[in-house]
Length: 261
Length: 304
Image (tube, rainbow over all chains, first blue to last red; front, side, top):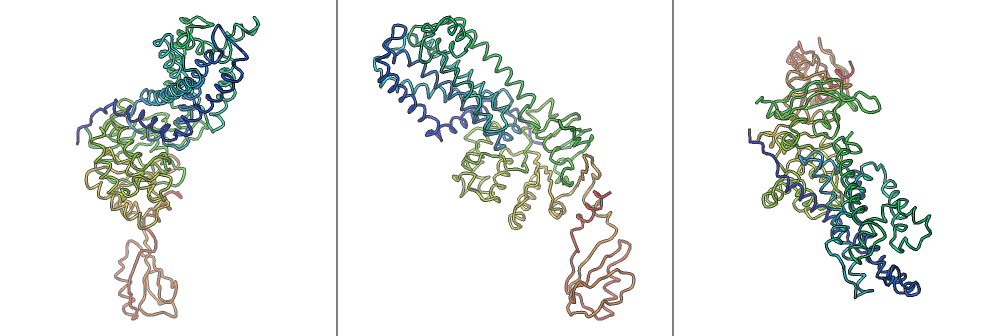
């Protein structure tokens, strides 16, 4: 009998990552172009048309204030959307069986999908950043290290959330409910377009319970050096949630919930 | 190391709704065998295959693939297993060549090694000309070929095919039979489930029959077919007959003026029948089985 060897885990993992990246690049017109178009409209309407009437926000031009929030909004929605649609897609088409029958361990399956989501989230984030330079060419990043760190952590966090959503999803409706009714309102109310300092006390306190506020403000701290929240607390919470959601995702995969009969 | 490609012991599966699909089945398939796993719809075949491929979670029992336990050595067990599922399970929007290359990658095959393998496999299965087509544009037969290419790309030692020729035309079915015989002759152990019992009889050396979650037969094809007490034959006559001839000791009926149908008991020789027909001046042009022999036996067994 031929010798049976352990598989090369790096090749299996890279195969899945490459497949995931190829998937969103193949449909770039659905995945990469819409955020650029939508964000351009935000910059035109809120930046160029309404922005000058608003004046300054936290001491910055309104369009400049908006840039980190809009980039973060794109990163969050695209990381989430990539994993939720891709993983639900393989479940729906039953091509998940290719992965489950193969010797690839569950942690590698999770990592492959998350890296796919992170790749799209960051690529879209970079595209939106370049779009923003058209409207505000003098933009300068204050803390590049923190900016990149938050970019990655946010993309990881929302990719994991997309994964968990896809595991439990039984229909295409199930993969759009959370982005539409949970993520979008939280992002819009999470300080993308305004500083919570302009809110009355009550609503400022309510806003502090919105996790998006911490993500958006930490990123704004990295890009512009201003924030409404504590950076160390925000980073700790993001990391804590990443650990929790990774553990939950692995538990779901190991138990076969939503994917094995 | 044992010489079994597959060892299943006391395998049970109870689904969440309470349906007991497998009631503690045990089964051994020898290395190099071509084994048929038959059973009516809902008998437990797909549950068994699902558990072997880890697509279905078992309730209890053990499964070993070439001695590798699917619980303790899951990665090694899976690395030598290939499964052709009953339903199409590849991304319909990917190109044929990408689907097979990706599958090779999932088994840790380096791209430089996978490329020539993929090319050879696609050529062997007549898919090379369609390598850049999106999978969804393939006909049903080509999709089946793609399923087989995918399952074989890592050269598994045990290949399980769950109704691989369902809905495939007869020409392609026969092509597939030849292909499967070839890979079995080259050393791959094959387990096949099918509803075409002719297929099982043609290809497989050993057979297991599963019904209501239990194995009701696990034997060689030859021994199983020996159990048939009566066999039906259809005789095509050279000249037409107006009425049923008088033949002693054989049950016969005239299907049409040119066709006699008979049921021959195992204890009797068919030569006696030919002798009597010869005496009556009835010439037989050709003879064939009335229906598939295995089919008769299968129906009889699952009816009990």
